[in-house]
Image (cartoon, rainbow, N blue to C red; front, side, top):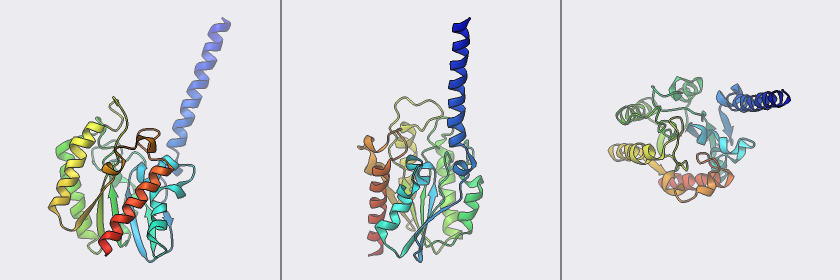
Length: 238
């Protein structure tokens, strides 16, 4: 009887720990955050994306996220607005579509000079992935940005490598990233002159040590990403 009671207590404790973790990651402050603004410069950069943009890998100090570090790399003339949202997809049929959110509306209403756009990691999950729909919706969204934000420079980013082996249906999938998301982004980049691409996959593919959980970059990874983005932006301004 004592053994059964102890087992029940242990199971209850584990359940409470699990629920506590879920509550942390899905609390309103994290799952539905306000935009994070870094810097005071006149040149404004909108950073649109998922948890990699949000800075989940440096949750304890989001000043170490690449969006914040980007200001340090570019200089005091710049300001970044982090519109990152955890778990979101580009796909309107995904489990958490980005464009359904209030923060997406804030992005559309903003007047930034530069837009850095990165979605696709969560779309790669088998529960979400659809090659043809992703291509159609990605292209449609790029054309909408061009129409509604014609004065903004647009950079689309190829997401970082996914370091998860044998993922379940609800985890980002490396195969779908490499054989679906990346070719589609490259095709769109080749098709439209107003789009510039920033390749984080090539930057990160040999650096598993930057991704402790296989998906989200740590402080070192965020720093490397910020440096790469700044290099591309500076190169296009010369």
